[in-house]
Length: 50
Image 1: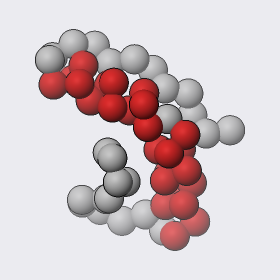
Image 2: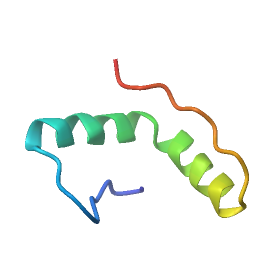
Image 3: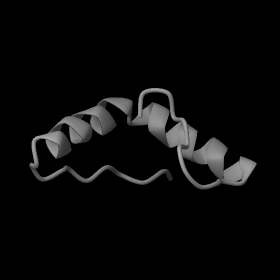
């Protein structure tokens, strides 16, 4: 999550760029959801890239 590495699968370059931009914009929310998931709690919705 912190560095945006894709561990499995493939994104075409254009889509990967969009996903990484979204991750950068929402990095705090992504980390918050990661910690919630680790504690088996419900994660919060994160807005899509517009």
